[in-house]
Length: 228
Image (tube, rainbow, N blue to C red; front, top):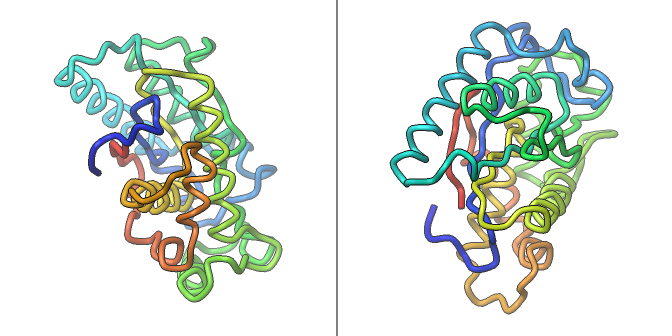
């Protein structure tokens, strides 16, 4: 997705969690309370997807001559993302208990609100139709696209303050990672901006035309991408 802009001190890869038990059951599990429950972790197929993604990342980094010692993993505190991040850390031989792996609440799943929680994932189409119409309008009691974009921008700023010159893998969820890519893509194209800090730069591109099109950046479960 283009050259690394000077405002970023690290390289970034993103990984959507592997296929989860909620995915298998066709359920929306988006609240922090439900998402952290062990019974909503990875399905066996998801564990395999996480392992394959880790092996792919390992191969890509080797080709770029980037040492695995240089990798940091930042992940959502949901059961399905913890399981995914643990699998990746295991393959890359990174201690999950070390400072190289960090849970960040800002990377959590988008909360779709009580009207959707634990209901069929067929209802995502309703949410995405609303997003396209108005990405600043949240589903009842949930988070709007703009809400998620704001906390992801805060997460990026925190990661940039924590690490320098590393390769950061962000393990998160479908909607947050789509939204993150939409914002980053627009940020990189916005060469006119004089703002240097990440929060200011990303805030400038959080406009209807950018946020409403986040579905263009959809990821499959267990899909890995380099974004910066």
